[in-house]
Amino acid sequence: MMLKNKIISAVITLILGIFIIPLFIEYTYSISYGIYGTAFTAPAMLVAVVVSIVIEKYSRNKNVVFIYIKHLICAFIFSILFSLANIDIFKDIFYLTSSIGSIYITIFVIVDYLLQYLNKNR
Image 1: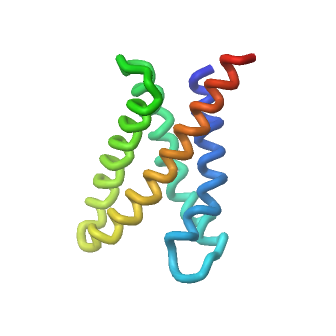
Image 2: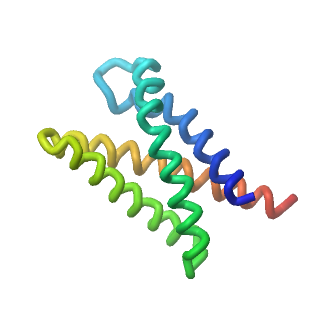
């Protein structure tokens, strides 16, 4: 059930990301930027699903705020690693990846938490 919730959360996050990414790129809003950006962020969401399962499985404190902070830390580490691949424009890429990453992780954790809450109350 946990894996199913994480995958559904990742898919919803990617769908919402199609509309969020264009806000960070260029001066005109174009959905094509969102579709193109989502193609790059989809593999990162696979990593987020695996990391999220590990965080929730081995976390001593099950408080949603602490779990969210752990997810954010992992997103920033992933942003740094991605930005190091583009060291010549590190500052710009790090700003973009950390901004989008923190928004994605926020959406991911909220949707995952809501799915867990809905499954408990069935």
